[in-house]
Image (cartoon, rainbow, N blue to C red; front, side):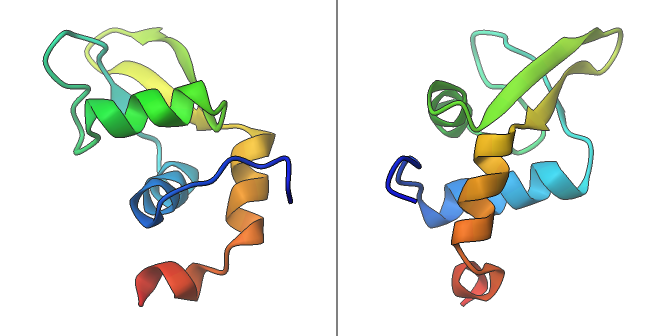
Length: 83
């Protein structure tokens, strides 16, 4: 677990959301959209917890949780983030 990046509660909640449902974002200068803050998205991308798929017309780019992102979720029980 020591090689996993430290994540905030809100970061793990977003990872769980991205794992459960398809989420698409735009990488425009204002905000990614779909309730995802630019700061959170940049951090998840920098830590290699998510990747972006190809642009889909009318939807943006789909977020994909990486194996590293899934390992972070496995290391933190879901109940701890919901409390």
